[in-house]
Structures are given as structure tokens and as C-alpha cells.
Amino acid sequence: MSFHLSLNTGTTRDITLCDAVGVTAEAGLEYIGVWRNRVAEAGLENAAKMIADAGLKVSSLCRGGFLTAGDEAGQKAALEDNRAAIVEAATLGTRELIMVVGGLPAAAHVLGGRGDHNDKDIVGARARVADRLAELVPFAREHNVRLVLEALHPMYVADRAVLSTLKQALDLAAPHPADTVGVVVDTFHVFWDPELEEQIARAGREGRLASYQVCDFNLPIASDALLSRGMMGDGIIDFASISSWVAAAGYTGPVEVEIFNQEVFDQDPTLTVKTMKERWEDLVLPALEGRG
Amino acid sequence: MSFHLSLNTGTTRDITLCDAVGVTAEAGLEYIGVWRNRVAEAGLENAAKMIADAGLKVSSLCRGGFLTAGDEAGQKAALEDNRAAIVEAATLGTRELIMVVGGLPAAAHVLGGRGDHNDKDIVGARARVADRLAELVPFAREHNVRLVLEALHPMYVADRAVLSTLKQALDLAAPHPADTVGVVVDTFHVFWDPELEEQIARAGREGRLASYQVCDFNLPIASDALLSRGMMGDGIIDFASISSWVAAAGYTGPVEVEIFNQEVFDQDPTLTVKTMKERWEDLVLPALEGRG
Image 1 (cartoon, rainbow over the protein chains, first blue to last red):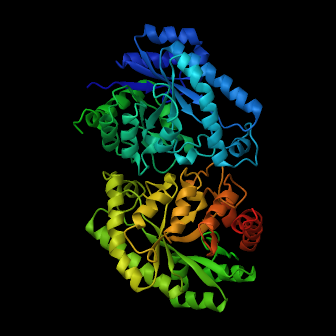
Image 2 (image 1 turned 45 degrees about the vertical axis):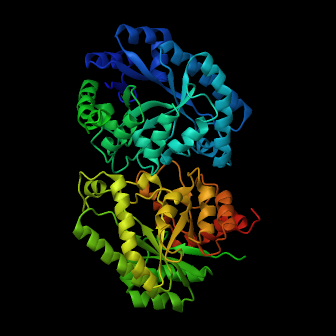
């Protein structure tokens, strides 16, 4: 089995898509995972051509989601934005659209977004995610795109995703076809989960394991909690165990490295990709290949 | 049913036990939850007398635990420390010893404590917790003290507790008598859990619901992630739902407010207790009493 490393452009947040494609291709990688803002900046058709011309394939598009609005206007806007994301994924030639499902309206309000400061009902927010997902599935199927549910670390439950565990993601996906609704395993978000091994195996069995993303969990937690993701080996995650579970579940797709970390943003992207390759070969690949 | 509010002295971190007892009694509360460092500072016997003389009862002692050491010396030290904590709880007249089970040796190492920087094996760390717990149970029973397992928010899994969900806590408690190993529901730590309602009900059924602690989850997360706990109503937790689940599970004990928050530490403790009483009456008590 040969596994492929992919650079997620979140890792090189501050450079253009064109530059990210350049460092990825130069490093000899075959895949790139792209963020919508960098695609939009380059222009969708141009982005697709630029990536193809460099000989790269797109491992995933980040991201759709934010489906928890309680009001009709917010729900309509979310559906429109997600339909646009589905079209973008299809145009870029990837089946995998990563979905960050959204947080509580009360949190959005506190953080300056659209939301009702009284709406702290997490059970209700989850129900709205399920409803919006069902509305998006037919459109995703038509475009041959898979909605890939991402369980986020519970530190982001209020502001980013009321979806916190792989089990919950698989339960949410269950009513829909496996080729239209999948799940991603992102080590940072799920390494803590006592049911991780069992749920990764389940994701494999159910044919829903759509993406594997790796990065470390750094300590102490960064003062901006969003930036606590680290280069593999710099934090406390046991990549050998999780990677062996992912391989045992039958995953054979590209493996994305997605790191939000100020120090990584500030360094030369060529160095970032070089380090990422070394750590991948040292800490992740052996376990995927059963040599770990 | 009448429920009793309790001040956890973590909330008034910077004052002595004597002062905390003073503001608690003046505010007309009947319970206080105490931290070991403030008890040690006052002297154990003196602390017990001071609390009793003020007409207060101790709702819990914080905290035992930190059971994940991989080396023999670390394990021996942990058992000794926990036996001391059990004796302290008994002397203070509380049955409830809150247990924070400990994190990964690798994290302890990074943060300057005793630990092996290579030991990132979370599955192994959990197994050691189970082993140490079994070793402590007979001593706890002899002293009529309950080891109260605390599931901590997964943001603390690496450095504080490899125990992250109420389900996991109940599974860990299962081999032991319910009057010797219980669980605590701390809203900050568990509000995000998709299985929360079901596991609170289970804790009630199994007779293990030993403590209910309330505080809010503030946004954005504080730059020192430990200090992101907030006064009820200041964050995004839905206290009505969780409190109604706790009451439905048959909990009738004291309810502690435990807030680690720099702004709260910096204000007059009398104001803290006054605000805490108001928020309790407004946001927590009605749901506990079925008026929520």
C-alpha cells in the first residue's frame, strides 16, 4: 500500500494558492488540500487549472458547514453557501468537501457574528445540523461530492462545531448514503476520545472514512486556542497508534497535514513542507504501512 | 426538594480558608467545597474546627488523583498523596473526594513536571488510572470516603485528566462499589458531550452521582486556558437543561460553584458570592426544582 502526503493550504495560511501549489509540487507531493478563500482569490476555474497544470490532485476542499442558524435567513444563507462549496469541490476535481457544522448562535453573537445571544441550546443546534445536512445531500449527490463531517475538538463546540466525536459524526451520517456523507479523522480533534479506535474501525466498516488529517496538539494551549495545532512530533499525540487504526480501517487515501500555528505561518513555506515530509516519514507513514 | 448552594474555594482562590469560610457563612450558605492547599495552610484539624464552628458543612475536598505515572516511584508517590487526601476528607467530614486522574507523562515533562517525554500512550495512561484506583478503593472504604471521578474537558486531556467523558468515568467506576467510587458532573467539563443527558441518567441509576459543580464556559477561551471558567450566565452553557437532567437523575446534594477566572479572583469575594447566589437563583435552582 502506498500512502500519499498532502499539504493542506491552512498550513501555509499566509501565501497564495499559486505559491502553495508551487511549494507542494516542488516537494514532490501529489496532493494538495485547499481552502475556499485562497481558491476564491485565485478564481475557481483558474485555481483548478493551476493545480492540474502542476500535476497535483486536490485531496479535499475546506470547508462547508456552519449549519446551526436558528433563523430562516441564516439557514437560507448557509444552504446557498454550501451549494456553492459543492460546486467548487466538483470543479476542483475532489469528492471530499470538509464540513465544520457550526456552533451555538449565542457564541456567534458573543464573537460578533449573526446569532441570538439567548440561544445556548446545543441539542437544538445539533438537530438543525441534521436538518440542513438532509437538505444538502441531494445536491451533493448530483455533483458527485461527499459531505465529510468533521468532529471538532470540544474546545470549539460553542463557536465552531456542535459535532465533537467521531461516533456522533457517524450517527449523523447514518441516514445518508456512504458515498455522499462521510467523516474525517483529524488527529488534533479526536486524539483524546476514549472510543477512538472503535469508531475509526466503524467508519471503515461503514465505508465513510473519507479523509485523514494529521497535526499535533501542542502544550501549553496557545493563547489563541485556534493556533494550538502543531507539527507532528512537537506535541503530545501518539501518531503511531491512531495511524495504525486508520490503516486497519482500510483507509488508503491521501493524508493531509493541516496546522494552524503562528510559528509555522511565520516560517518559509519550503521549510514547513520539508519538515512536514520528514515528520510524516518518521512518525506517521511507518504505522500506516504496518511498520510502526 | 431543597437544594443547597456551596462555594468551592477555587472560586476565591487568592484568599485564605478562614476568609472563604467567613464570606460563605455571612452569605447564609450551608456548604463549602475546599481545596487541599488552603486546608494545609490552615492546618487540617484547625480547618475542620473553623468550618464546623462557622456552622458550615464540607461539600467536597478538591482534589486527589494524578494517577498516571509510568514509573514505580511516581506511582508510589501518587498512592501516598491520595491516601493523605482520603484522611483529610474524612477529617473534614465530607465523603466526597474529587479525583482529577492525571494526564500523559509526556505532557508533564513538557510542562516541567515528572514525566517521560516519550510517553504519549493515552490508552496505557488510562489503564494505569484504573490500576491505581483499584489500589485506593480499600483505603477509601475504610475511611468512608468516596473517590469521585471527574471527567475533565478534553482540552485538559494531555496535562490533567485522560478521563474526558461521564461515560468513561462511569465505566471506570463500574468494578467498584457505588458508595466508594462516584462521579461528578461539572458543567464546564461536560456540557459539550452529545451523550450527556443519557450518562447523567445512568449515573443516577447506578447511584454514583456524587457531586454537581456549576460554572460557565466563557468565550473566547482565556489566553490561559485554565482560566476560561466563568460565572453562570457569562458564557454559553445552557444551565436549565443540564440542571434538569441532574435533578431527574435524583441528585439532591449541595451544588458547588467552582470558577477559575482572573476577573473573579481579582474582585471582592463578597461580591463574588453575592453574584453567584443571584445567578444560582436565576439560572440553576429553578431547573433543579422543576420550575425551569
